[in-house]
Length: 184
Image (cartoon, rainbow, N blue to C red):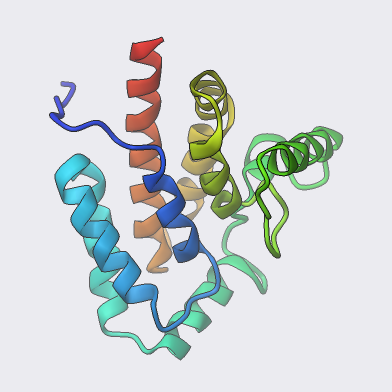
């Protein structure tokens, strides 16, 4: 059964998830709480896992969250938060081409992909909102939603707090993809 929503998702909301995927800081909890409130209004399905993420963050110091982030995404990572890895594998020529195309898109739109490769989920969440609608649809349908599903799947059986965040992101991307393709 398809849930009907009265409010549409603004693609710009996706960029608000990006800092939560990056190395944590003292503002991480406040950002997560604010985003959770927004999701309650526009995407209740995603608000549920986001609420679980907030609940786990509430009992942690920034140092403890940094440790969880490092274990999840950096040193001997539980999963790779790179869309290209999810789609093509880690050492694949097609991933290299994908990264080069993304770097070009970042440059075309005046965006900095910071300290990550441009196929990192946080980078791509910043890119999507600045693209024209037709390119948003293509990026969602062929890359972003599927890649986020792969990351969510890798984290699903872990105890990492980030499993909830990535699940919320995947649900928002799926919903946005449905909205964008129904308008095409």
